[in-house]
Length: 366
Image 1 (cartoon, rainbow, N blue to C red):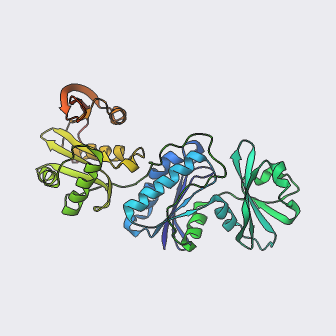
Image 2: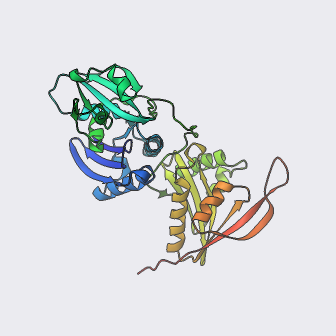
C-alpha cells in the first residue's frame, strides 16, 4: 500500500511517501512558522522524486491534532483536497495516537502522551497496552500531577519535559513515516476533522482551505460537463454546456481543470490569438476557495500563453471582486481599462468590469 503522509501538527511540515514498511521519499520544511503554507510544494517534491503519479496513491494520512491550530487546519484541508481530487481514502491520526504508536518499548507501565495546548496548559492522554485509557485531561503540569501517578508512567510528547527529571521521559519527535505506518492499519472512517484539546482562542473561519498538487488540461466530454457544473456553482449566469463546448472547440483555446474529469475543484479557460492571450474564465468551487487553487490555475494558463508565443495576457474582472483583484495584483496584472455595466446584475445596474493586462516573456522553443 502506497501512503502519502502529511504532518505539521507540532513543528516543521513533513510529507513522506511510503510503500508498506519502506520510505520512498521525504520532504520537509525546516521553518515551522510557514510549515503549513509549503505543504503543496512538499507533496509535489516527493511525487516528483520517485516519478509517481497521483493515481498510484492508495491512501492519504494526516495528523489531526492537537497541536498548532492553523497548521492542523491547513494540513487537513490540504489532505481533503488531495483525497477528493485523486479519489483515494483519507485517514486522520491524532497527535496522541501517533506519538503512542511510535513508542517502541517493552515497558508495561501506563504511557502518558503530553502536548502543550497554550496558556501554560498541557493535554494528556493515557494508554495501556497500546490502547486509549480514559479521557483527555487538560491542565497545568501541577494540575495533571494530581491525575497522573508519574512513578507508574512513562511520559512522551513535547509536554513531557514539564514534569521534571523525576519522570521517565521518552524523547520523541513526530515523524511522517510513522504516520504512514499507523494509517495503513487504520480503517477509513467518515470525515477527517481537526482535534482540539480545548476551544481555540480565535474564531474559526469557514473550513474552505483545500490543497492540491497538480493541474491537468483536457477538453473531453466528461471534463466539459463537470466544468459546466462547476461554472454554475460560481456564477449567477453560467455558461451552458453547449456554449462551453463551442468555446473550447475554437482553435488555440484550452480548458484547464484541477482534479478529476468528473469532479474538478477549479477550472480556467485561456485563448491565444497571435501574440496575445486572454483568460476567459477562472473559478474555484466555493468549498475550496482560499487554498491556492486559483493561483495554480492562473500560473498554468500563463505558462500556456508563454509557450504559445504570447507577450501579454488579458482578463476581465468585476470591479467589486476584491478577492480576485488581490490575486491578479499579486500576479502582476495592471489595470488598463474598464467597461461600465458589463456584468449583468439582477439587483440593479450592471457591474463594471476592469480590464487587466500582464506582460510576459515568451518561452523559446530552443
